[in-house]
Length: 272
Image (cartoon, rainbow, N blue to C red; front, side, top):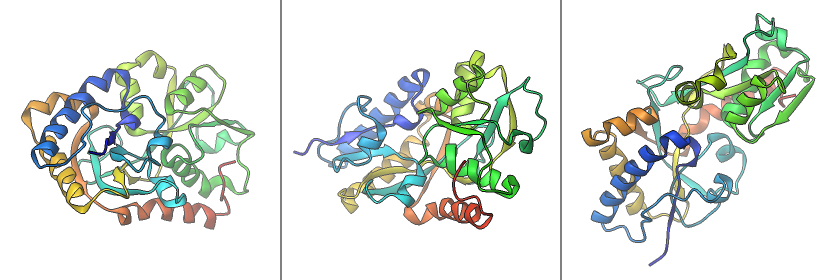
């Protein structure tokens, strides 16, 4: 029996880990009932998501959509897109956006006022932290350099902390993460304001390795549909902001590429 791997590291704030564990346990029971071999009983929180995305034994995970369209090394198949019930998302479609946040007392009134300030991004390959940020700025950038500097922080939470500490001035934070921080770390977000909202794009897809069989993918999709309607998991879904899923494949990520092309058309190909 091959030992498989599962992770939900994209939205796994310490306050949410119990909910993720209970939902995964329910998925495990369904998969094992359907005869899927090697299903891991616990989520892997020991490895970086970029490593997990490249693991051919990945049974289930959640990935950022941007590297899936720009980098061939994460050999993944899209299972579904989650629907989130948080401010800035819609219950009718598996889309979300980013909020561009800054310090509330910085004296700036509009997005254009942040020209020549210091930006923070979680990762250059992030859709919500970079691609949607770039797409929001492109129509007003006018030149190919907008900021005085762009720092890479390693996570959305670190970007928020950098702004609160005045180590950076503005960042794009996905609406699911920002809602989680407001709920569980209100002191961290209290000094901030929302300057703008980005265009919408597909939510972070649930994925599996390119090596996963068609039958196992069908079982995963069935398990996801069942846990999204199981009344015993209602509190856990609410903790994660989960309202449902849309079965999808890689074609669902096309709007992410379109936003990249639009920024290039405006003459702003890189977030700078």
